[in-house]
Length: 444
Image 1 (cartoon, rainbow, N blue to C red):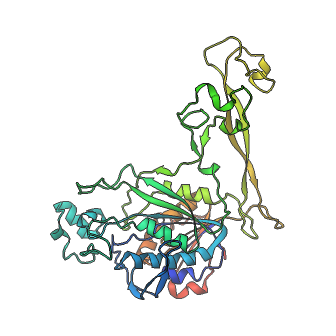
Image 2 (cartoon, rainbow, N blue to C red):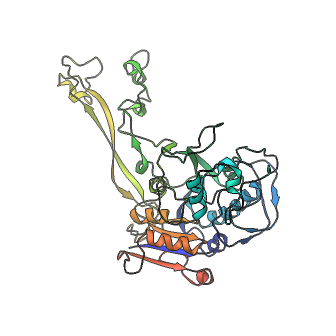
Image 3 (tube, helix red, strand yellow):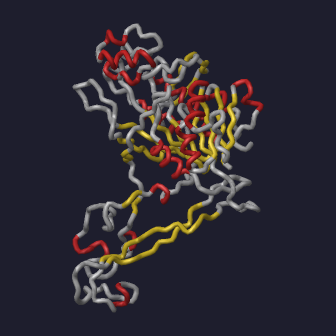
């Protein structure tokens, strides 16, 4: 029975109540800088210091009171993210990973704000009037106006580069920056701009706490475009990669064998998902599923929670039915190839097919029957997409958000409503004044 815990409160305060190394995977998307005012009460942020990039001197920002994403400068926003991710790194296991979805924004550009970004009646009013000009945004109560003046060295209409500012600052703070995945949206929001391409992507950064960590490449492998050795449509003439110039076999021939799947590339084409609820910044479930599958195992040690590793078996087979017959080509009729040379059909292959045969423990704990579960954390829970994915994949989860309204939306979206509880799950909502007295992790 999986457990799903919902905690309402300031992310920094709540994270401090979670024990060290209690989470296997983080899949989250923090509020983007300068794009939306979620109407939440301001929270105090302490004075902070962080290096903008490895090797550069640290930058200090003063104490401030407000909501994450509404900071007056990108430097302050990044410094606050570093504070949050320091706590995230503490609660993350040494073999765990963190996936961060984050978008960019423009300095002092009114055209960067789309009606769909506006809360409630203000967004609806702009959609109805279609007034894409500065006057349409002025005086809107509850809406964060875009920057009127350039911030620091930024010029008006400059792309701020928030994703990479955050990535480099976290790298300087001790994280391993392992991958920059491009989330390519097939259905991006339209923009009114006519002097640059429409933004149709966001970044998904893979961060690790240690040099070595759990990653299940098989779970997120993608189908190969073809059966050719490269896994795509590039073909080497006469399979020269298998032979040296003198005709002898190459030592790296096996690595070029055709495969049915290939390692997942760093561009993920995933459409956005509409959500009719109160939260209007929902990332798609398919995106989160890839992150959770790659970073968590179906089984874990019930004692130390170490994930079990996937055991695979590679099978080599040949494709027949080429439509040609006759003698086999030279060098293709050995005892281990082409059925020992007893067939007269010219065959294509070998092709490698990877099959999962089970899972193996990675620790020496007694009574490790694999009944433990991986824990997935979203410190900016919002509409509960990460929790929803954890439920579907039979993982435990921890949800954190400052807004009680968003937590209620997430509970309803996940099926945790009065009279409609999932019998196979348990859940609990924790408020800030009781968070320290309650179990810190699912099942704790």
